[in-house]
Length: 319
Image (tube, rainbow, N blue to C red; front, side, top):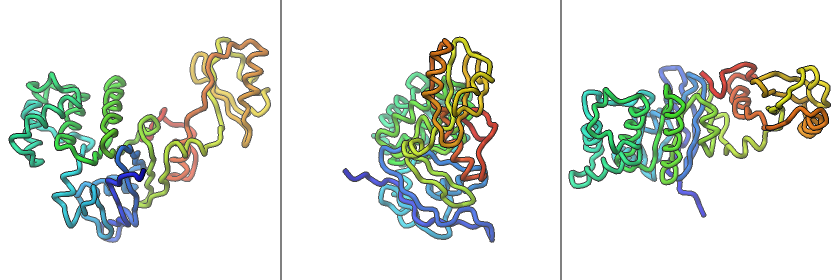
């Protein structure tokens, strides 16, 4: 079955005077897909999203949203777009219901359909009991929910989210991620984020932009499948000295990453997993967990954007 293309970006270029922001950027996004859009600061990520959203005009190229050209049919194209910026565009002196009614009117929803549209967007975003609350009194997590609610109130085909979990606590992040998975069932979602673990847990495909050019466009499953195992993380109830681990054939590095967790690095081209398991059994180290060190996306990101692998970083994120 052929996938339905909801976003088609073709040869986009944008210059600010003599300075290139993006050049010849092309990609498609399909219904039911979450696309992770990554890039270092100044790479052209925000410019690309603003052009797709119709906020900014390109110097060259075209964008089609659900078959409508963003320049030739801007009203029709924008009717299929829901956009949430990093800072949700909220009016804090309004209640949740007042704000969503206002947002619905801006989107051209008729008076007869408006109440149902507000009700549905609140239900999908977990705001059913918050309609009468003043936005200024909402937690940051609920403000993010409200920002997403205004982005989907008109049932767009395409949802563009810029750093949607920025500044949230772990529980709020989990809730927003679950919401994004639900939205992707019937929409196309572009997720712009610096949190690589978020891309790994949510996205079907990864797009990396650097210096205004697309340097990677690949399904996440293929990307992770193409990575050779270079290190693993093991859990040992009775961990030995690190020097003892270095005696295992193929293990060239060992470091503690928790009270009973250790990261073991392999020699190039060597998978020492079996040797580690056998050694742990022989020495009664109490092996209770073993997992691949899931840093493949991080490694690829660093190679493509900085030309080197990351040696030390905050877990799962790029600032």
